[in-house]
Image 1 (spheres, rainbow, N blue to C red):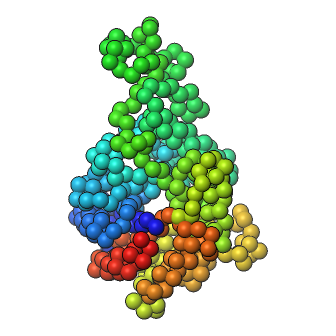
Image 2: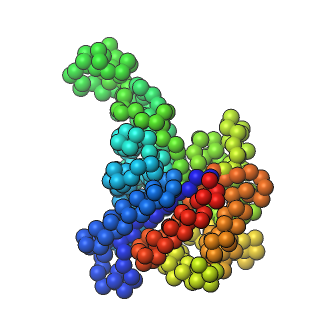
Image 3: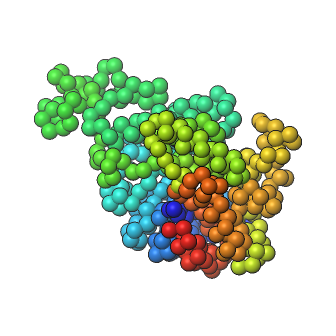
Length: 402
């Protein structure tokens, strides 16, 4: 089993300080404190044996939570300070990116780190910034409800990922898609290229035709890893997403936590992957631990993610009658007991955590999971407690599942 440390880069502050120093996201002293914590976390995770250090991509977070505006730049800094750990955005929100720029920047980072990169791509769900940065595609945040808006976001995501893969794997290529065209304009080609003979002689074959018109492009560099960095997609809830990732060779990070539903989606992924030629295997005192969870991870989720409908990940079978879809679980249902019952939160003694992970790892005897990602709440608990949690995990949990 491989282990990921997943962090939402958060400007460290109490709720009182966030209000007093608003907007704390623009407070340089606190932002530098956050960078220092992230560097220490990455170095310790590297030494402790974690395989991947991952963060989100989000923008405009003046409140200081998830201030992860340039994950690839951050990873370049962290990679220079570490030895073996790999890095992954979870994920670059493709409806807000030019796909060729994303392909180029990830390929450069792949070279700078000599292959210590996973490419994580997401659809984006926060309208505040996806609507602004995704305006070239008229894309908005994905409501994940199967609506026309949701389906448009999905089509943009899937097409831009297709372009990224072409940029990584083909020397000279063209593309005539619904949202993206290469060259542009596609039918006429690019006619103002005075050094056509230079490109015909030294560039990729087929870029320029005999009339000097650019008909294809060649994106450089190709990734360091062959054919490209492994792909992740966060955070999967629907069967549509599981099917897509299985068909596309992407590892999904499944947000659904209730074990029977989690197992069902894992089985679906394995079945669809097999249909596409990939045969896979699924890869303190209790009271003190629960109190810590209530005051840190749970508090952050309750105050923040409740507004985005993340409670859907914590559904239990008995919710079907009381809150039949598309009725969303209300935030009042976000309780510590529900988090633990649904297995979204694993809190307890070291032995309890081992047993819980073992149950998830084996999926009830159906095969082993390959990855375990720890959603780590940097910035909401004291630094000394953050280090204590990672030390316990590194000493007792990781070795038990190697």
